[in-house]
Image (cartoon, rainbow, N blue to C red):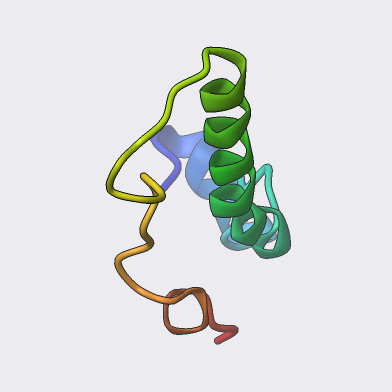
Length: 68
């Protein structure tokens, strides 16, 4: 929330505002970008794992990201 007298006046006339720089759609892409980046690093440095992929999402994206 805004602090001080002028901040309160601004809040009164403008209402709450969002400072989100990234949209929900952009945020949903992050796990995919991280997985691709991790795979690229593993390929560059010739890293292999005997346990399979290193990245396992704890919760499926459909459960985490939902429009309210």
